[in-house]
Every structure is written in C-alpha cells, then in structure tokens.
Amino acid sequence: MENEIIEKEVKQSEESKETAPKAKKEKDSGERKKTSRALTQILNGEFLTKEFVLNNLNFIFFIILLLILIVAKGYYGKQLNDKVNKAQKDLDEITAEYVEVKAKLEEDTRRQVLVEKLEKRGLKETVNPTKVIRIKEDNTK
View 1 (cartoon, rainbow, N blue to C red):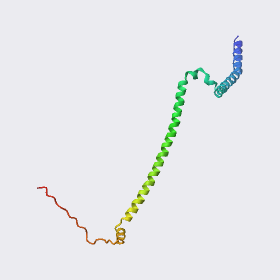
View 2 (view 1 turned 90 degrees about the vertical axis):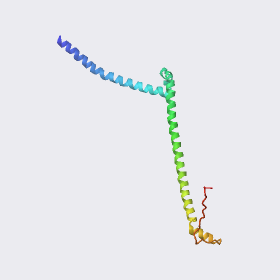
View 3 (view 1 turned 90 degrees about the horizontal axis):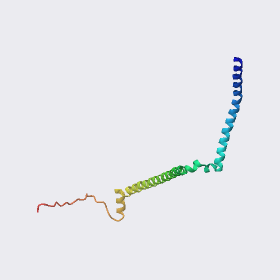
View 4 (view 1 turned 135 degrees about the vertical axis):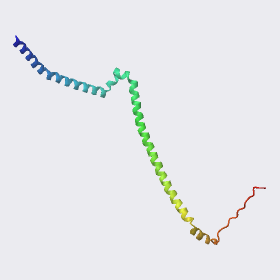
C-alpha cells in the first residue's frame, strides 16, 4: 500500500516536471502575444479607443501641454542666451572703440601737440604763468 502511494507521488512529480516546461512555454508565448498585441494596438491607434484613455483624456492633454512648455522653455532659453552673447559682443566692440578714441584724444590734446598747432596760427605759449584775480566779497554791509 505504501508502495502504491509512493509510486503515485513519483508519477505525479514526473508529470508535473513534464508539464512545467509546457506551462512555461505557454506563459512565455502568452507574454509575447500580449507584448506584440500591445505594440500592434499602439501602431494601429486602437489603444486610443480604450475606455481608460478616454476617461483620462484630460490628464493626457495636461501631460502633452507640459511637454510642449518644456520644449518652448528650452528654445526661449537658447534665444535669451544668443541675445546675451550678442549684447556682450557689442559691448566689447563699443568698449574697444571708446578706449581707442580716448587714447587718440589724449594724444591730440598733449601740450606739445597743441603748441605746435597754435604756432601755425601765430599764437605762442606764454612764458609767465597766468594770474588769477579773486575778489573777496564783504558780507558785512
């Protein structure tokens, strides 16, 4: 009697070992079918008709709006960066021009250059220093 029970258990374990790979194969093929079916539904646009999507349409539109805002923010940031770089370049050019003009002005207004220019007109440099006349006002009138 015990022998029969043991034999039944052995038979069942052997059968389960044989059916386990079949079940596993069926499970793998089932997952592949689900994946390929989901991909097919996405490509066909069939998933859009599902009730889940229709119920959450507001949320989907909100997510799409956020994605559009993120892209727009990126373009706006790039545009601002380009403007800042252009303004910096213009500022550098203007600063260089200012330094150049200032140096030319200092060169042209040196004392020796002015004396040479005025001699052509018949003016000479004074030898005596200029005197300033200051009048003191009396506040006690």
